[in-house]
Length: 340
Ligand SMILES: C[S@@+](CC[C@H](N)C(=O)[O-])C[C@H]1O[C@@H](n2cnc3c(N)ncnc32)[C@H](O)[C@@H]1O
Image 1 (cartoon, protein in one colour):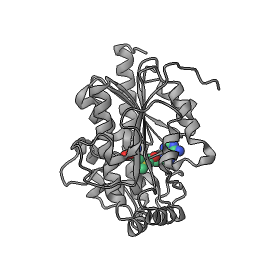
Image 2: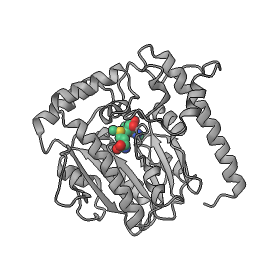
Image 3: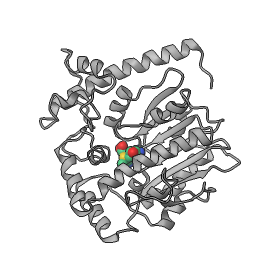
């Protein structure tokens, strides 16, 4: 779908308005949470560093505005640990609350490697995007289970190589979308859009994505560290297949997924701790179970492998271990429309 310049400007203005509203929402939520991070930290969403983040001036102004805060979002409860915020804690970000930190630390106590695993997963994201953009010519990404903004987000990685890349970020955590809209801003030549949707609702995701992506052309669907939140009952392989069926020939599906294969005892203990505290439960899967999630799609070499071994930058070296598998598949040659 090609948008006129005027449509693009109208859309950009609407996105800016939403971002401004979102920044105010973030501020109100932080105020409402008595245990929220302190005011200095609130100026940056990613604080693995003390460096200023891009857009900080705008954000600081918004957070200190004297506007009346919006009504609290009832879906946001800082006392309930959430996957995105726990993951942010492991990555060294600062967008988490005590309940998230307790859950994150309980897992660390049982499987300390979870921290290295989370960071290795981000490194895999970077390798996968560079491969898809530079070697496969992909310019469109549907990133489902986006997580909170962190260094090297999908659009930054992709647009650093090809500024015209278009990205749709999807998450079912409203707070993730609030942060994403405020901070994940596209290069001028490309585009970023944001959808609040559940991975289990492929038709809604595809319909929303089609507003920004041209699904008659190749695209990559990113499912990084998200399918392990989908229970067997919800049919994760069928979900992947439903998404893949709607992609044009030459498209790709990227998956990374938690496994207990390398250290069953400690990983299971960590998962039990997580599932006791967090309503969105985790399901680790074996190599054959993760391979089955690709639903028979042809794999890009080296196939489904331990995540750090998927085309490592330094061949023959696996600097960190991660309790995760990763793989990238081609989509099928023919495509069919989902009927709803
Ligand atoms: C561990 S984070 C992964 C973030 C990012 N994909 C990465 O790999 O760095 C998992 C994300 O998936 C989201 N998520 C979990 N279940 C989901 C679902 N059913 N639909 C959409 N998003 C979901 C969470 O809100 C969280 O932001």
